Image: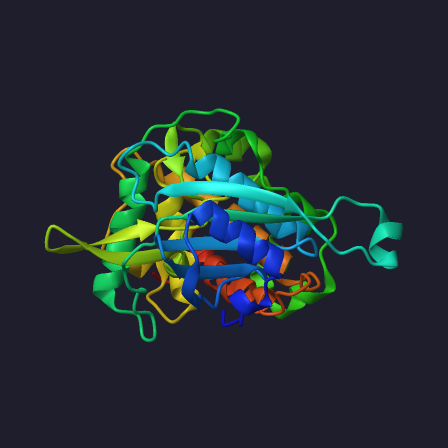
Length: 330
């Protein structure tokens, strides 16, 4: 998951000046945050008015720009008490590239900058996984789920957004599927039925806040009242849904990065008491298909390491699915 992001000096001067105007202070030092899966800027800036964290997407990164807009809308409406950095502002400005090629293309080209408070925390210890930090990440998932948001335009319902990958995988299995556990190829129709849109809608329905992309690299550890707690960052995918979804979501990434297998991690921290086991199994089937199908696609521009991470999570989630179905030893 290592990547080197562009830095403050890589920004055009007019973008730097716009950020300084919004921040009401001149930048005197900066730190770039490498890693993650976005090709855009992620910077902690020290200005004459204080510290600020900014994400910047350039005109060549329209996907990142859309995510920044979505994150700004969601972050601005997070309920009080959600363990997340405070949203500051979003600013968009037109690109100043007047080259002939750009003019001929005709598409609107903009820079998108979104700003948050700086979180004074550390990264989770994952090489190797610190079990105390794993427990902390699990508690963070449950704390997020304590907040009610209901379904709305900003936080759409997980029940209304079915994952298409189970049907895609079963309808036209990619050639690379043979590189996975052969059990999946032999049981694709059954897995796709288990992960059908109707089953997803029933399993994922709820009115709890769901981060929907919670992993170790989307969390920081801070000290509050003398105790370490987690703070979740990067909220562009947030939605409403069942209370178990974020806790289930962290487990494949933990296993894929050398931590305990999902069923072992659940011996340390449990799902909310109202969680239905069948709903979790539907989720595991859905995410198995998502990771397997995604890992076999061409890498997206600028993120060549994403498919390998999806592959590792696909292996982990497939093993978890078989374990939940009683087809392998626990």
